[in-house]
Image (cartoon, rainbow, N blue to C red; front, side, top):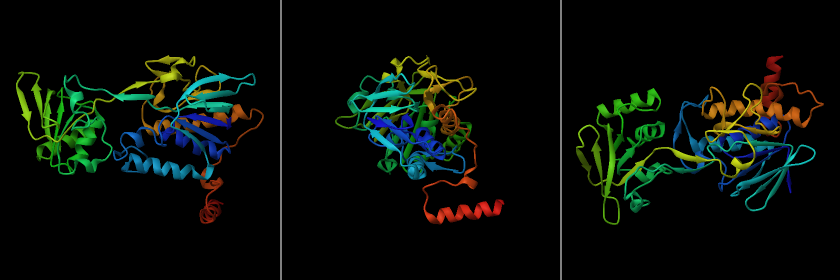
Length: 353
């Protein structure tokens, strides 16, 4: 039996940052994740994808963000159960919980936090009859290593942030990038749309809108893609294509968590955002992309905020008779850092006083 103060289900960025916020409160955390390493989608799906909306970082690769978060929480020595999925939850007489994984590992904690992102997921595939014939033979649904596309001819399909961002990134990597979208308008960030349009004007991206990829050709490997324009049914073939990358998002599933008696709306867990992001089960919280409430934004930085608020509530639940007075880290420091950093914190305190 693994015992901890806060059991976090999901080791993505939000779950990892929750460890930091809990550590400031002297609360011990243990994390469960079905993936073999921490980081969630940032590590598994797009470690080399640049992220632009993390405060203080004009641009940071998803994998580097995870590395930094792991370094940030190192002083608090969290525990990890990786490669196992949280399967069941049992409430004890004292109000605590025992969570058991699919491999039988049991975890006991007074507070459970679900930070599972989108849950378990699989890529949404376009309705192309022979697409499975070319999977791992030129068709990829996830870009893990951009250098694989160095000097290659790439066709990307999609109209969201992922398709736009990767088209922009690969414009300086691949020999040729085509972006195909079934509509004229994109769903992604306006800034990204403007960048794609600028790159299209100077010939760095072949932008094809109001069209869809309808067929793939090749013998043992992908050789070309067929694009059909929706307004005229005119077909265009992009020959000598090395890669076709449809980026239509992920199909999320909560998995076993959906059977825990939580209040669920559109595959997301409803929480009380007016107070502490607690679910309908007292002592069970949900933070990050896995939760929903009025005005919800599925952004990493919003997950960070939710983690901070949740930890304050968790502290009061674990220690109902104690009053916690919040102190800024510039004053209180972060216990566990090396001596040089502690000395630097002393200087900060002196300057404040």
